[in-house]
Amino acid sequence: MTIRSSGFSLIELLVVVAILGIISAIGIVTYNGYISGTKKTSAKNVMQQISLAQTEEYSNSGDYFTQGDTCDPSATTSTAIETTLFGGGDQISEEVGYEMCIVSSGSSYTIKALEGGTEGECSLELTQNGIWTKENC
Image (cartoon, rainbow, N blue to C red):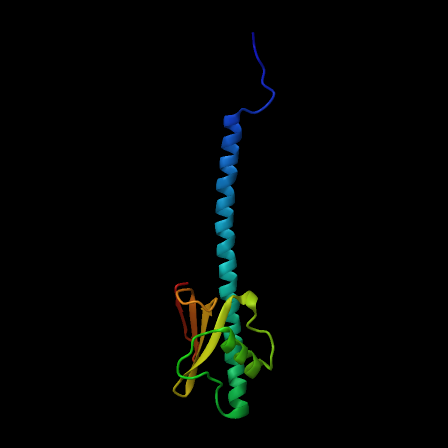
């Protein structure tokens, strides 16, 4: 006597669920890496905009806009940059995910960006001469 099965066994269903779990885990990790990379690229673009705005600030006032000899990037320093250099525009938006500040380096400046404004996260720096430095990225 032959018995025909018209469905899937429990083992077959468990294997399929396990495979879907593995594929979704890989997809989530890849997507998070993509998001992190786009935020870093956006932060670099904003830093280059700040550098261009610094050139205009220097031609208008004869000095660069800086926030002291040392600074910790925060929402306050980011807002001050937007107000002074961009006339209140929203270049350093929350979607970028980085806070920024501008440090005086002798007669030049360095733009600092910190992911989420949190120590230990990705840190980017752009000097007036266009030299990039990054840590924990």
